[in-house]
Length: 455
Image (cartoon, rainbow, N blue to C red; front, side, top):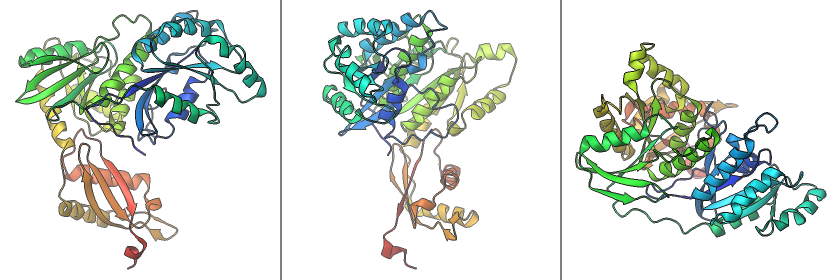
């Protein structure tokens, strides 16, 4: 099942915090496991992923895992400050906090550090005792953990899934009311995302200064952030800025966590995301994760290589070579347009917004049904569908059922015969024949009724 959010609504945020090795990642994977992420088979995208969406009892909320900044306490004396930093960031910015402890080993001094921070927060805190498989662990839960002041702990086994339903019920009960859509649906919501120090602040300032048509500064729906309205060729743009929110974060782990939290909220609310990269450094793991998240959330994607002047001065590669590297590093985003610019000097800045507007238009592109079926028929004739044990896949009819993002429904004889490679072939066919640059496509397959399959 693919979860889809309104481009205008910020989902509530749930943060999972706790010391290393208590099972935060296992719990994160268990809670988000109900979602079939489109990037699961894409190398480098889901590894150490820090964010995801969960649907439970008709509520969709984002969940952030801080386990990606864990290190081994035996080899890092800085673990206590890092643990405190992630807990403090969660207390500032999450709507609900899931505080995970280890039911098998009991409390540790690092737990006490988090406890002190959690007691000061004004956010709802759910104490979760993970690894509660044994009778000894359950007795420990009833003893030392119950006295921490967060109510009765939720005994769960993230590995086996025990107790997670009750935990999700409790999370949903404590979520704030669902956000309301922005009134003006004609606005284009544009998010600027990227890892720290790639020049997001400079790019935002350059965009606003270049157009000189700022009409208002409006409080954003994310805490401590500002949505800025400006116009581009009479199109109202709501610029969702994630830049600068981590300038006080001194530790790398806290930066990673905090930027992930902000990026998730911004991406969930946008129509199109500009992924800013540093042209002098190329693609790093965090860029792959962000690109995967943008496409997973079905948002338009434009890749902006900032600091191009500096990269060009280095003289180590040509623009075409860097494009080739980006495509190799992110093959799942091969359809996203790439431009290079310098936000500081504004060189080639004018190349960015036309690409954004083109991708925005492609989000709403609708293919006529007759033309769509003609293209699909020709493609099937040239490249026959696969078969299993002599039973071929038959595609009878295709239709585009929605836009923003585009979604296509294929009526076939048996959905189990649709292979990953043939799905990819059909998507490539759509992209080759229709203008969907920068836009993720959803292909769904539905069996025809039994009596319709008779030939």
